[in-house]
Length: 544
Image 1 (tube, rainbow, N blue to C red):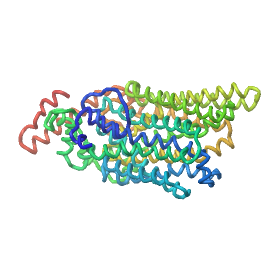
Image 2: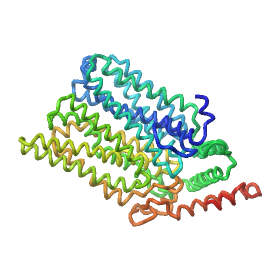
Image 3: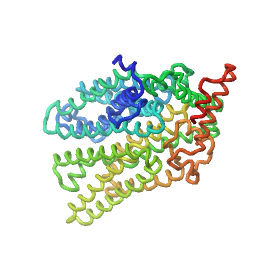
Image 4: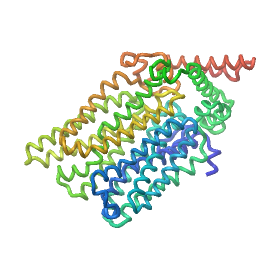
């Protein structure tokens, strides 16, 4: 892997993303290397989400761990992964800025590997639970750091697609896990559950060697006053043969540096942040980040995913094998929807996708709830009504796949300030994991007690998300990460729907002018410090 140290441009972005994601359309020079590290990491995340549901119902697994016959023990054995991930998010929140994006990711991957080995070799339930807790801890660290790392290395014009492509690897692995669960269902014994758990280590073999040789985020380096290293990384990201003295590199460097200086100059005590007294509104931005993750989990995707095979058996009358097969087919259509998201994420914008997703997925749940209610009243029509319900759930997955499945991860990586980006990303991801734990742990109780009303509850949640997004969520598409500071610095009101600059997809002229001002300011600073005009400053200003 030594050759990665020599990579630049397209291939550097590619390897950063491969470690975190997987595949993508052709990109220009500076984008390709950073995708690889993100891909393998997010693949591991998706695989873990999908594989354990098949493990829990394996005959040999139940024989080795008979305690899981108790519903409460069964639930905690599965959901403890989310609790571990929540703890990992808190670790990233407090130590992520100290360690840096790359080293934090390495810590997470190491914990993933240790946790996976403990699960593979388990013959006692406490060891299995400890393994899942450690595995979840690592996943919490990774899912907090990876989107931030990638967004800080990507250009604004393709950042959304890059983060989505990294996140698609999650869906690819989730699909793989479902098909593996179906295929291995024909074979019994320890292989039926130990092999799927062991397969996790494939992702470690890809991600860890690549990550060792990748550069640190240039924005984090500037945050730590390591300007020369940041210039080197920015030059590598621009493309082969680009030098740190190139005007384009200096322009990017100066724009980021001035934004950091402004943030440091305006730094306020944590108390003022919590009371919304800081000019860049960090707490408001953190709440928006956490809100997207809460919306994702309370859209009901985990509740539905957990019980789709059961629903296909009980409501429609399919056999267990057919239910597993249809669940795997559903995960494939879900993957197709996620790929479609790559095409439209930057064309439609984050706001519009979330607005559409809340109405469309909410309608699916509403129709499904009505069909289940009618099936209770008219047992003779149970099969057609059950088929209609299943169709709505399949459609839900498609609509969810290109809206709430991916957009929250992109939005979370874009909306926060540089000084709070790591902490806010960790807090948002922690929100995702703790909500996932709550939904997963209590879905069975909800289904047993509410029946069709349980699905109506999620329809109400989803319809309620529409006014929240419309009123409070600014657009982040086509904005640089420094543009988001301008957004909150110049627009203190929490309501955004009346301000076109905050809701339009295209980058507003005001933000372009603000970037020009930052570059001019940096040029003047350099002139004052050195007594001579900054190299290339006139050309840079002219370009902007």
